[in-house]
Amino acid sequence: MKPTVLIIGGGVSGSVCALSLRRQGIEVDLAEKSIFPLANVCGCCIGGTGLSVLRSLQVDDWVSSEGQRLERWVGSMGGYRVEVPLDSGVAISRERLDTELLLRVKQAGANVMVPVSAAVQSLDRDHVSVLLEDSSGENQIKQYDLVIVASGLNATGANRLLPWKEPPHGPFGISFYGSTSHLSTGSLGMACDRDGYVGVVRLEDGRVDIAAALKSGSDSRQVGKPVDRVLGILERSRLELGCIEVQSQISVTPPLRRSRLAGKGRLVAIGDASGYVEPFTGEGMTWGMMSGVAVSRLITESSLDELGDLGDRWCRRQKQLLASKRRVCRLLTTALQNSILRYGTGFLLSRMPSLASPLVSHLARPWNPSSPR
Ligand SMILES: Cc1cc2nc3c(=O)[nH]c(=O)nc-3n(C[C@H](O)[C@H](O)[C@H](O)COP(=O)(O)OP(=O)(O)OC[C@H]3O[C@@H](n4cnc5c(N)ncnc54)[C@H](O)[C@@H]3O)c2cc1C
Image 1 (tube, protein in one colour):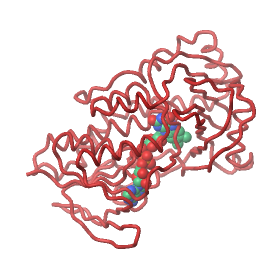
Image 2 (cartoon, rainbow, N blue to C red):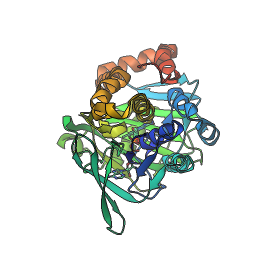
Image 3 (tube, protein in one colour):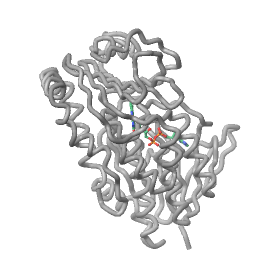
Image 4 (spheres, rainbow, N blue to C red):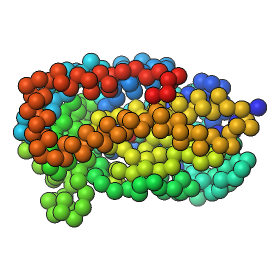
């Protein structure tokens, strides 16, 4: 007897979790409310750790060959320009990545329901009830042994049963495609400023992805429209990208800092749906993918009788997996908001780029799903 599992959300976290469960012979339903391709606020970079997760599911070949290989990080902080070589990582548009991963999930035999919006109705001792609604408004209530919420930042109905530990606040995300002929292929540009930070990268199809986390609050709003603030940070930076033209719609997120109970009973949350994201180290997708694989292993290691407290066990497992990474990211981001630290970091890294090696190696380190971290 195997459990019945529903995954809510077909972004990177949900798709990787579905693939991992299918590889272990578990039947999976996956509900995705949007028709792909879908633009997502994202810097579109996956480091070596993320690629190793994809490798463990035999989908890294496609990502590595389609993605744009990253060769260097070019930073601008405290008035200094910093160049650090990268040994791994690719840039790939979320439209392509998410569409391809969801296709692989279908090919692996999961029941993918699109466009279907899912909302958890109740959490009982023996099952979770979920309302599934398609685009014509037809709906049905279904019961599952387990529900995995992977519905990203805008997950209102999907995981209302998992309480906030820290409600959304702090910086918000914004992204769009822009034009600049001054960004060399293989470079990941990042400008840090008093108003936030902006990542700029050329994607596999030549488009330039511009993604930023901007300070929120009324003082910041007075600085101007979000898109102008992003362009302002780039203009003031040492990236020297020239005049940038906005070439797409602009997407924004709600405030990024947040944390939720990651699981309860038969309900589990992974990826952005489980809480705090800070895009500075560009690891959000990697953490979501790692969580997807780790939760699938927790499921297959448990007998049917043990599934009733899977969510509670997931809370502990996720803490072991991500707490220290999230802390480092939060510390880095907070430090870079301070002008003296920005100046000091920029000064030191511009003279000794090798000081960034520990962080670069950390982002490239392959992940072993059998180890707790
Ligand atoms: C400015 C910025 C830059 C970033 N840069 C990077 C980067 O360079 N590299 C990186 O790794 N990460 C980056 N991130 C983080 C990354 O974008 C997220 O961590 C990642 O998208 C999380 O994936 P997810 O699958 O959890 O959620 P999502 O990708 O948001 O997927 C959630 C899916 O669930 C669906 N959904 C939502 N509600 C429902 C529902 N009720 N029913 C059914 N489906 C539903 C949505 O349609 C969506 O497809 C960045 C974030 C920001 C804000």
